[in-house]
Image 1 (cartoon, rainbow over the protein chains, first blue to last red):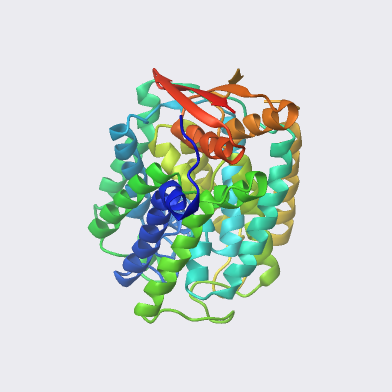
Image 2: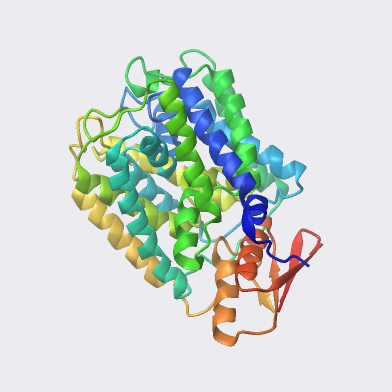
Length: 360
Length: 67
């Protein structure tokens, strides 16, 4: 029988792993930035999947094309750790098309803001006030998303699948990664954020460690806020805060901390769109059951629904850049950004309503 | 018995929360199939002053919450 320990010892016992993971994720972001990754990015799931979409020529934005080893490492790290822990489990079949569309919308929102929830936290640690506005939008989106959850929203059960189903995604990623090391096969940015990257071996190894830790600790940005709203459970939020602390300290040491709104690295100052973009991400992530980072980890654990979601992210990134929806440091995209965001909210509302039953 | 197998996060713990709010039972049995759900339900149960017993069999976890 487990009883809750009270006091500081109980707090440490319950939360040390997620706090340690947060600190290491934050430190990894700072180290990867020092090794060449774009500033205040280090480890952005949305940006890096967008770069992968570019490297595979799904979009032609020349400044954001690079097959990021971090994404591969996160998935492999989670896979290895879950196999060691006997938690690797091929599973799928829980509304895959809905998840694909949710993935696309989350990515479109993230690229309006310029970052996934993880990069939002990293940007906050770098002193970027725009990211605080994004955080408000993220929280608003999550609060909206918890209403359908309370009323019985479900994407239905996932079922056990064959081992092959759970292995397709990690193996595909690993093969593509090896191919990406060949010269001239995939696109590679010569300037812009896509050209800024840490050496691939460092990126891969650091990401494997982070992926393994995230698998163990279940770190999730959307889950952190959601659990506070739904259960007054602060467990995952401690990981969230630990990332900010580690990034803040790291940035102060490496002289990369800059507080303010203007001239932040790879960010724009359009507050309304920062808010709306992250609101779309928050709401979509709650319906998906986890943020983009968490989807990668689950995909590594053999969850093919999460793998489909990651393909949704990549498709969303291609749509964002092909139709002028993605922002840049200059501001929001030239495409019909507001209309697409409105459409995104309408789709989320429809999916929230039509997937809600009164009980589980 | 709440069967929360195959449900993604946070549906298993939400189902438990719903049961606690509705019936405030002395014991609740929950069947889940991943350690994330076990962790979430354990934390929620502790916050509601339930003790938790977990039995694992064939990749599934039978949780017994009792006051």
